[in-house]
Image (tube, rainbow, N blue to C red):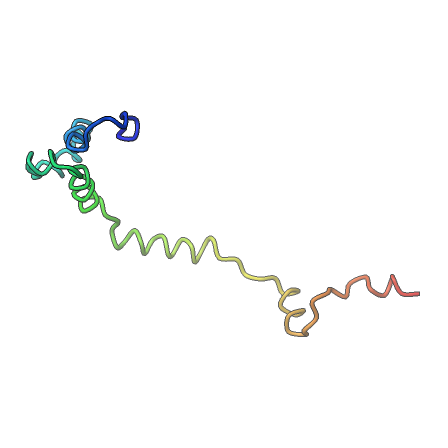
Length: 101
């Protein structure tokens, strides 16, 4: 929304313009910001900071993501790869006797 504005749009108006797009819970999260702070250059950063504080990730979400990665996205290497690795052989031996004459 802000990126779609022309580059001639003054920096002092970006904060109030961003506030015009907010509604509901997001609007309540930024209502404590003073109009003077919004009307300054980089006033939109105050809005983004307030929204980041309100909607920061919860600790339980981080734990859920870690558990999901551990149980569902971690892959166990196959036994064949493990055996080759332990033997120090990088080329599989299956079928090598057929090629010899």
